[in-house]
Image 1 (spheres, rainbow over the protein chains, first blue to last red):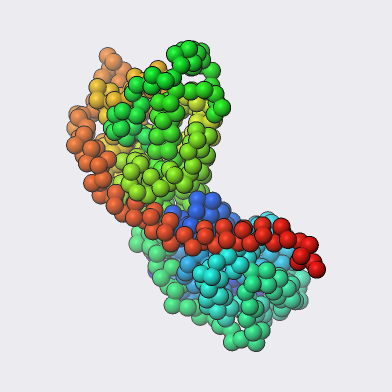
Image 2: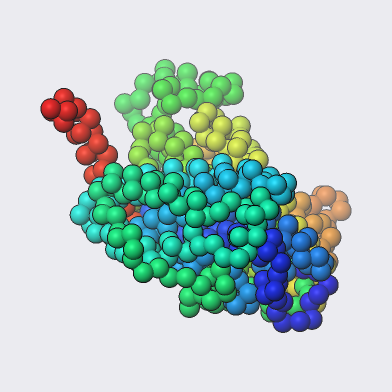
Length: 265
Length: 337
């Protein structure tokens, strides 16, 4: 933790310039998702999945660390990756809502992994061509990881959708629960518009057709019905308006650095 | 150690060589072991050797799997991103160790499912150490430093154990364990050089984990039932007491370097013998924990059982899907019509 330890919480996302805010959005989503996946440790349905879920969690946490490190440099106030992860309160977080939802059963967890990886993989691939060299380097590594996550989770979606009556029922329920949170992954606001114009970030809307095609293909193979395209979509995480769940996640995750201000771990 | 219960139960299984076993084959086997040849899965081996190995390797695997819980307890609360990633990777390594140890046991003709069922039913044992709770972040440091440190003492000689697949699995396990041990010590070092509260946290963890770590090596040699046979077969290379002493000798100076005090008023350096002498171990506590009465025995097994039961539908679905795929692949012509 840096020397800025006597305050209770820090604000970074608020009034942040577009590039910093964009990096924070990516970092927060990666960390929160990695944290959720890590909650599976010791609870997976089989040993092989213990290892696979932990792998994906480690990938996300690794991505978050690179992104926070970059965000801290952009912020320029001497903060560290840990300050950004451990000292910001809920309204300053900018993750997608879908990342912060509780794990639910294995059906919910692998479906979320699939839906998110199907959006992130093309996103990272496009971001790897960014004019921002740091983002491009982070994206190039993350794209390889996302490709693996997509394959792993996609195979599970097919297995569970097409498996037994029970697994099909659970996947259908997971799809109903998670689908309203998928729209946010393709939202673009003034922050994106500015970065797209500069060639720093891709336009998420342009990547949506690839995601839709991937989702349609896998759901069809999983014998699951594709939800109606015009369904109501939840939104807010990218603006700091979250679900009730994020506060609990942060309370657990930030407990030690918050309880012992200034301590080095 | 991770297989300390070997010394405790099942008196008959590993004792006598059945009369049906060919004396010549036994002699050839023992000569190979004496000559430091590795015994491989397809080689002839005495039934008691096979049973001892299955029990030892599976107890070790179970310990790795149950051992994921006490440390897993702190993954979501790890105090920095670096610590979080390292702890998660460590717990993942333990799952990996469990996986290849089960695979090593399978080369002896038992299935993972069978061994796993023995763990879940409470029939099979695992290391007593994992029945203690992790109450503060310092416990993560103490486990890495002491528990992994004790595990390494036992497992380095197992890299030369007579059964090939076990020995080879242990080479990789040991590399990872020694990395974990350094990681744990580094956590302790950071805490003991930190704030007064952090130092107190480190001392409290040492106070709670020291004696259970010494118990990991199993009962004293005089009470260890299978040591002789296992030593002769080179399944085991050193006695419990030898390994325990090696551990104490290596660990006490490390603790002093941290500026911590060991919870043993009788601990003193015997300059003549060159060893750190320690006080009496509370073997009643050890026996109680092995018998199922440790602070977390019920919790650890229950958590594992719940995970297994709540994942049953996933495993069934995976099998059902695989069967459907096979059926579809078997009828390509009809599907194309």
